[in-house]
Length: 428
Image (cartoon, rainbow, N blue to C red; front, side, top):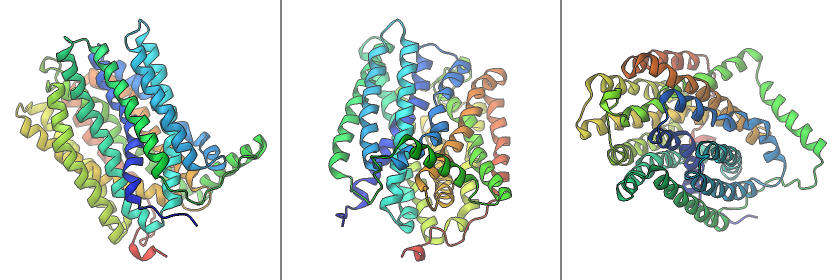
């Protein structure tokens, strides 16, 4: 019988470790490449390609499900992530800096996607359905804390180092990435001692044919677990629930930091970090925790439409900022608080629905399929977001994003959800 360890000792740190490489690849890289002279069109295209491993991770997620244990995969990937972060730092000052950093970012993305599969599977193995619903707010919150850490701490640190080292941007970013490598090694050591050992399959002697058969079985079982009409609506929801966010995410960062002559707000790295790392963090914490508490009390279905409203309508703050150009940091921070609170609340719906639709055998690989489809819904619009913004400007671009919010409402309208899912009574 395994020794019980409180989820509070490992859920927050595990999902911080899950979120940190994601924000580094998908957001911090955007700021870094912008400072190194790339255009928004180039940034949107190349950094969106870095999301490919999260899209195709269902292809190898059954292997994680069938070979070794989830705990083993988590720890192995954390070591590989630390190595890839050091690789980015090492190549930033080389003549082939773009090719080198992109290579290690891809390695980081692959390792992070595999870590996501194992961490989510570990979460579902260790916790019952009620605790999964209750801790969904906690895991989302700490995942997003990692996002805020990337935007609100790493970017300002890079800015301060640039002041100290006379604007040597490549050198200062390499120092940041060496620091990140050290953080991941420390998290690997912590999790090696603190993570529990849940009952998990460990099929070390499986043949290649048996693994391939398991992969095929898990993939086909996902797409046939519901009647085909219902499955179509499930797929549409996973692909398009975050469509407005997919258009907004990368251009939001460049909008906040590009100078007014280019249509941006012209925030310094320190101001950017303050707005996202303090006020934005508070909004995110409240949104994620409140979302998890509401869903665990009343079930996902009871609050679904409120979550949809929360994740879409607050995007209007960017429309306002692109027309009004507020120079008061307090106003900008308050607007970002609203947007981050809404995102933290609304993302609860997507996470819980993916847990809901992944129930049953092969839950780890089924959840990976869900997240892969969700990332595909982020990757493709993100690839053209920079081109569209450069074509129409920030103001018109953010108006287009608001019209795209109708897509989120439309794909949610056809979902079927058990009203009891997530409620406390579900606990056995």
